[in-house]
Length: 379
Image 1 (cartoon, helix red, strand yellow):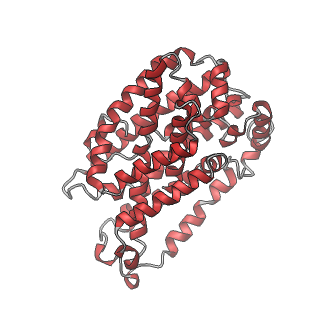
Image 2 (cartoon, helix red, strand yellow):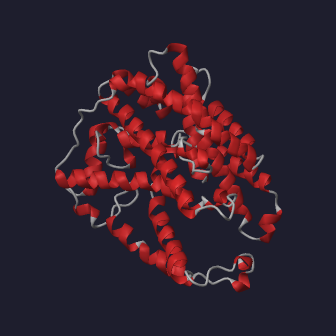
Image 3 (cartoon, helix red, strand yellow):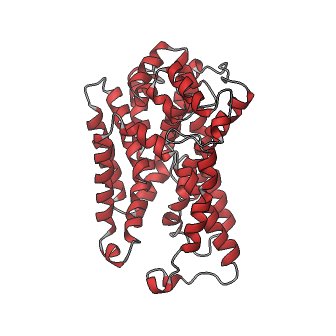
């Protein structure tokens, strides 16, 4: 949660700095975004819910304006690079990374769904969550790929992207003058819709560590969390952003294991006897977790063998494509000459780092569906 909050602050700071023409530093922009997020999260679920419900309206409008402004520069004719095996591997990597971002809410969704009435329909809760996340992620993914594809043919966009992802986002509003800058500010403020749930969930995560932790008010933990990711964002605005992008890509693996372990517990082992909810704070009544730990460790065998990431390439992945996945990554880095390429080898226009920017744009709308409004909103 802190990682995603950090990335949201950095991107928001980049956009605000770009809008100001450099008169406002990225640090000041980061602080502004962090303060807004803290102010919303610290007052609890009610103001947070109101904000999440209505912020999506202007956010959605300006993103459609962005499509109209930047759409003519999207390059839909770009071809994937490599033979069929390489392209298939790149697309699988792209898909797995995109899946890891919405999956990250699996561990925190209960922090919000706990406010639903016990009589809530399980299929309806699932449908709201699935539809809300699917619409938002598909929408910004396509928009992100479109913007990134234009970098290869638009020198202005290429210059902006070499500055920051936020500068490229602002470049998409070129031609709209001051109104375009206003739209970019709205987009930057929309990043709070992702960071606020992260703060709220992280604060609750602190409290469930034990009775002593729970005795400390939630707003204190929300403040502590905000300070942590503010410091991380300011200190690492030049390098930590890329590190977090690459590290958070690994989250999809353990989240998939978590989902499987919890699903098996619900559907197989506890299907008939249910859970004793009164035992969750009593260590003497809780299992040691040996079975869950063993399942988790066994689950890592597959990713370790087949992982295609910046920090690790498995032995199976070495044999994919023309010269192996690792050689393919190095070749793409040499071609692009851009550090931002190091997230993954994307399926579309790898030489321009489409995936890296797509991941950045994703943080505009990455919050879980927390109300029925999620069916029509992009939060």
